[in-house]
Image 1 (cartoon, protein in one colour):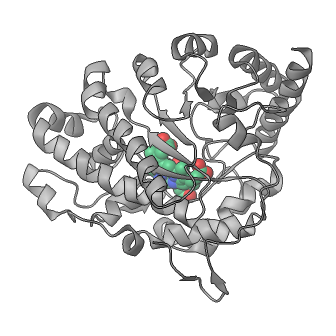
Image 2 (cartoon, helix red, strand yellow; image 1 turned 90 degrees about the horizontal axis):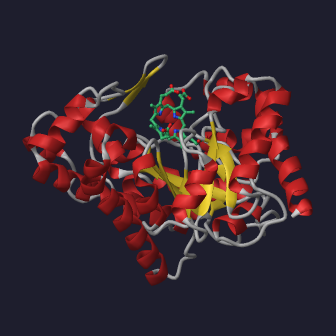
Length: 375
Ligand code: CP3
């Protein structure tokens, strides 16, 4: 799939002969193996809280940046130059998948993503591409991943990602962010069969997209079901869980069939506290948690076989560095330092202080080493 790739003005970049990985702590934790300390990364670690990010992004449209492998690579590497994160996540966006299905999406500065022509009627589904050649439509993401794997020089593993079907469906119907998701939820109640068709179409594209990311060099995958919290347990069971499960199963089968590495997969279903038990058994090695869940409760409800990721309230980074350290220590005591990947419970905000992000990372490393010694 990821054949020879030529990036702007640079040498041929191939998804082969990647530099050897020097820090596998994140991958070990994701695979449920013992680690010397707790690995840490942050959702939205490549983001506007970094002045160098704002500088690189300043002159260009958001999705034009997403389509430039060199820019994506640079933005992915920026946080790694400042902080000893244990993983990198490729700079891109979940909304490149609706674009691949033929929808227009623009990013309006200060407002967020916007679809000029969202899905309104069931008949609008026919306007979507029914089969997507991901190498053609999303090859630029694969190129960004391959380039970044080379430029990372094996420092840490690279995470690829996709939005999950319900979250993408909700954007495609709402046309942007929404407080209630009323339009998208109306589809679930009025047009359950068409909703299933749309979710299945998205699932098929997401599977190929994630497999393509591994072929390009991604060493782990995260699925973002960011809008799970708008659904209750029953709708989650019908419109999220089967598709989340199917994605893990199909991706792993295809990776095996294509003799690609069967990389660890993370599912992050924000605010799906009612579904923790189901998520623990949905075929993912790691479950990401938002901050509304107590670490001890998550461990009790999800058993020992699963690696947990999260879940400090991002707003805790507005506290003093001393307070951040105290909160991290408490979080580590709650999760335990093994089978655990430290992260925030959602992404970093643009007005957060890089210094406080550094304090968070340092506190995880310091206290998990202490914790390991005292056990
Ligand atoms: O985490 C990372 O550092 C990797 C890059 C990444 C971005 N978006 C870059 C981005 C990832 C993993 C995403 C995922 C994403 N995108 C999600 C799922 C995670 C979540 O936050 O729940 C969602 C819902 C989106 C859709 C999206 N993209 C929104 C709602 C916005 C606007 C919000 C805002 O902060 O303005 C974006 C834009 C976006 N995606 C930015 C970044 C760094 C900020 C805009 C910019 O750089 O100009």
